[in-house]
Length: 67
Image (cartoon, rainbow, N blue to C red; front, side):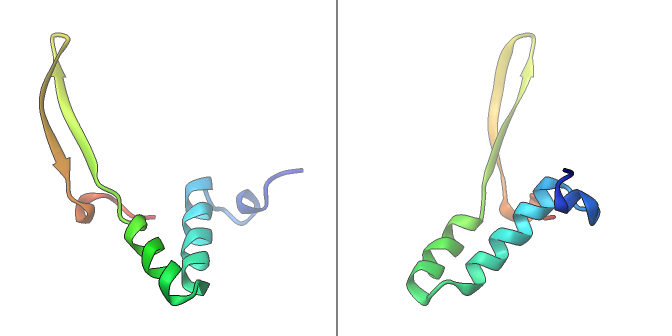
């Protein structure tokens, strides 16, 4: 049986994003505040050259694409 999110044209990441937003929206005040703090992600990357890692840089949450 195919997955329901595939039948409506969503990727798995889109499906999980919608489900998590929906869950956060129905939480009570205190757990909701904690969940909202965890939703933002910060990415860190480094350029590798000749087998050596360069300087690490943070990607701001505004620069991370949202689905």
